[in-house]
Amino acid sequence: MPFRIRVPEAGYTNPAFSDRFILLGLNENFQAGREDYARAEAENLIRISLNELTSPLALNPGDGFVATDISMGHDGRLFVAGYDTQDNDRVLVRIFDQRGTQLQQVDISSASDSLSAPDPVINVVQRKVTEGGTKVDRFEFVVAYSTDQSVAGTSGLGGLDSVTSLYWFDSASNGGEYVRTWTIRTGTDADDQVRWAGINRDTGYVILAGETEGVFDQQQGSGGRDSFLQRIDTELDGNTQQPAVAWTRQAGSAADDRVAGGSTESVNPGLFGSAAGSVEGASVIGGIDAFFFNASSATSELDVKQVGTSGDEPVSNGLYTGSTLWLIGASDGSYSVLEQDEEDPVLEREALSSAAGFLLGYSAAGNVSRAFTLNDEDDQSSEAFLGLADFDGDMVVAGTTNGDFASGGVVSGMEQGIAARVSLVPEPETEEEESEFRNNWRYQLAADDSAIVDLENYRDDEIPALTRVGNNWYVLLFSPEGELLTPLN
Ligand SMILES: [Ca+2]
Ligand SMILES: [Ca+2]
Ligand SMILES: [Ca+2]
Image (spheres, rainbow, N blue to C red):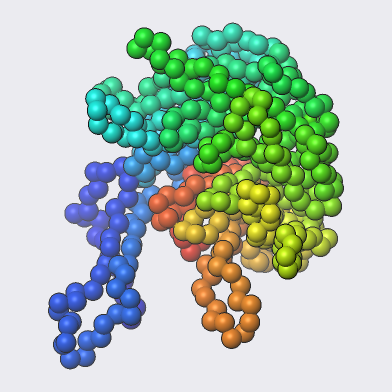
């Protein structure tokens, strides 16, 4: 039976930072045994989220802010990292509630620092710590960027270095705000470019994943640019919390290697990227391969998984969910998984006429489990994937096309942002099998020179999308069904 829920604006209030939601159930006492009333098939409550942000969240209204990364957490707060091109590329973090109200701007670098397109990355965590004998929630974020310029309170090591800052939410400061715990500058005497930063939920250590052209302590260079994974602990010096590098692990091929991200979700921190050549002696598959590994110290044995096909699989981003590492990128191949009796499954590739986005799922042992290719229907245009989020058991990808990705029939020839939900419900193997609902959809922004560069998951209710249109930066919201809840015009 179709029905509609109206929430009149007058009289509706929500003092919380997060959206309200309704859990809708049946009045069983009323209908029990009553004539002409039937019981519902399932007694699950229907969840209805009330979205309060209905226009795009403009991140640089009239200023020079360039957004580079977003992260979601702490009662629906959205954290946006970036830099201000009108203030010496000063690194900033802007924190918003779900209505798009800015709650705090955190100045990460100093007013005296003069940076150059520092490309900061951010991640947040909620973890339990013991304070006075009781467990309390501690909310933190880490932000990291690379620079070869002087940064107040740090000493340059040579070329680009990584500058990393840890912040925590102090409810006693100014009515509740994020304050700095520490800042550290790390790297080699050559260029070090941080690509990802995260915080371990259990013990709170910080992990950096990036690329280096130098050689870290106790490490060996493999040639060109290598990957590195670095653990930074927080140590107590009296009552002061100080950063301390626990270890750095460097790995790579003889050529320039690319790092797309890292993880603190597994027992040992991990890193993933792509390389053209053997990474630490692993077997080359061909062309550009994807690779990933976990490390527990500077010297423990590395088990590098090098995966892919004879074609090119350059990895742009990825995500660990449960026991699966998901990798995205773009290639002119169509991918599928060949299951074999008593042998490991094999990733297969068929050549395409145009570039398409790929989404590949791997086990920790390096076995491919799922493979998806999202191409334009006519196989003519170039798609690239940049952003990835898990959402209600599915994956959502985003990036760009220069053609007709969503089969809308309009091709401007310019780059336009795209997003798609990829259902992980398996396809039925026989016609007799009941086909389950697959919530697959595609969306293409009708805005030239646009891109969707990063995605987040807001409590399985909405998909916040960091979006560029020309020089303007926005956060857009998609519904679980792929409807744009914040129309651009
Ligand atoms: Ca350096
Ligand atoms: Ca290398
Ligand atoms: Ca294509």
